[in-house]
Image (cartoon, rainbow, N blue to C red; front, side, top):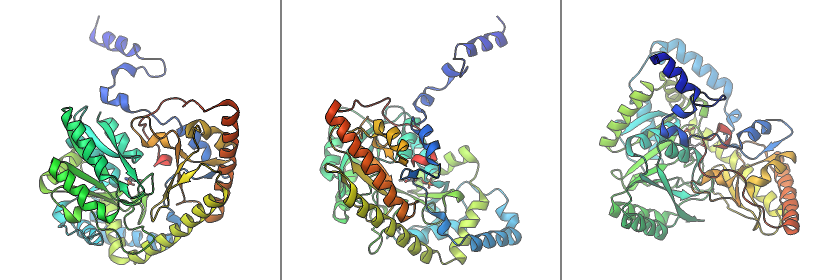
Length: 440
Ligand SMILES: Cc1ncc(COP(=O)(O)O)c(C=O)c1O
């Protein structure tokens, strides 16, 4: 048989839907689309109140002012903005990023910073340079779905560490490290979202932070501190970052997605020098360099616009929406539901009464014109069946109240069903799934 015929033949061993089915790299097998993605297509319909997606409310930006600024930028500096740049990123932007991080106590030099395509690319690059198949990554229980999908793409074994309303539990972290080390497992890093966590909405208490660092230092464990929401706290000053107290042991991930606009896709990693060098090489092989245009737009925005005032406006807007959601939950939710009280960020994490399965309930919720994200997407091990994530960042307060009202009656009906027919069996696949933007 000729080489060409053999190739064609081997292609036919796939399936009719995907002739290349059996030819993907092993790591691509972990990439499965979220089952609920199809449902989310429906949630874009105006009659549905979506409490699912974590899209920032970009319409609150002065869009005409930003538009004019971008026009001027291209006219005045188009030869730079429309050109390639270095893989580490524009130095002017990196200087500004250091100013932004100083609000959380970080003293960094622009050399420490690598600009990335949102913090999602930083997560991908970090995992790419550290994780071999079956290495362990520690992550909170629950954890950010986009991070779990990066870890799955590089075949990491994610082990979840328990949290409570004050974030990661130091004792649980210590026990998990000891147990895994005793079993001969290689742990590569702890991934944590310390502020207004996605999806749980909780914040790592200030008094726990030194202890978490101490435990990781003792175990020689790198910390990946993912902090998209740190400047979006509703009360007082931003929390002090973990990296502020351990620049050698912590890689900090930041983004302008929540404080400016996710459409510019500008995030960053601040890392110790050796890790920084690897990140630059990995970024180069992934994208050559990041968009000069986006970087200069962000640098110009930070240099010429009252961005701190804008962040304050965002905080106030999200605080009102959080209040609308918490008030509605308190007024409407049936007995047996519990939820977190976020002090910032975008999300409430809701625990359903015993026996109710959030994924099985979703189609009925969508029929009742409300959507949420079932908890299983935020676990790599099948956990989260009785939880769901509600976002208050996008819909206005009256829509949030209506959405919670609809959800409460769906849960009530589910409680009745459960009382009549018994607890629902978990439906379908569990574990990390490649998220769509709607799930983030
Ligand atoms: C915890 C967390 N990390 C990272 C990201 C990725 O954000 P981006 O890639 O837009 O910077 C998100 C987005 O929702 C998030 O919630």
